[in-house]
Image 1 (cartoon, rainbow, N blue to C red):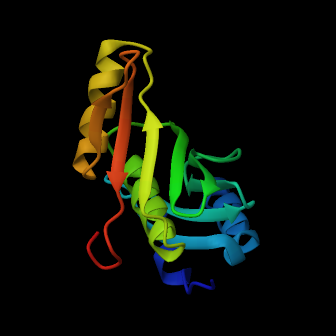
Image 2 (tube, rainbow, N blue to C red):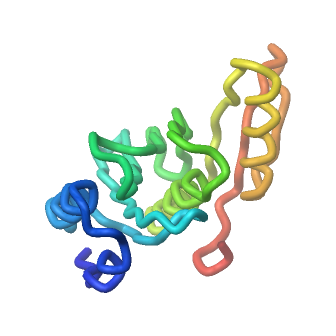
Length: 162
């Protein structure tokens, strides 16, 4: 998908980070599925790479020079269901995770995937509470498994209901 992002980028400060970001944007242009700004005004773009059973949704921000800033990994082993394997986010509470999740839901809608599943990280209670709040914001249910490990579940809304 080609984007005319030149005006979007021209608003940002032109320095070495901007030049690196612009070059990466041009290189990734065939895989870009969305562009935007985080809550602090820093430009980002989201790419999608579909490897069949594994889908990488990556977010690159202008202020990050080396590699992916944040990513979401989906495992699509069944035609109508995907598992969220991992979400890695470099900065919290500025809209990056939400941009990744919205992109994942749009991808699922385009592939007719009807549900997401996954497990919550058990690192610490504060982290788990933030995860629960994040997933519930998108309509996920939190279900206790027989072993007590919390599982997440989302019935994917039809296109246009996001």
